[in-house]
Image: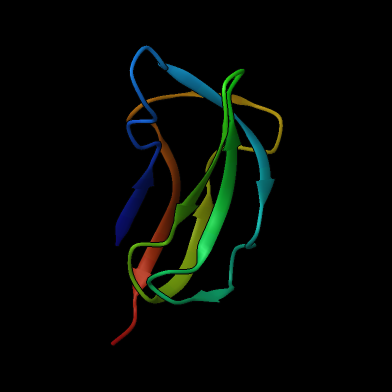
Length: 79
């Protein structure tokens, strides 16, 4: 199982807000699929799945603030 975490978003940015989920638990994703959109006061960021697999869990609801390195979701790798 792979943790999808909030990536480094740029100099001086320490947190973001989950603006939109492109997936739901149970959805299959490909490595380059955007799964979540994060916003800061400076920019909007799209976070890719990073691997192909099945979305097992979304840990942060839309509208919640997250810090860099925080787990957003869990994806189980395809066999």
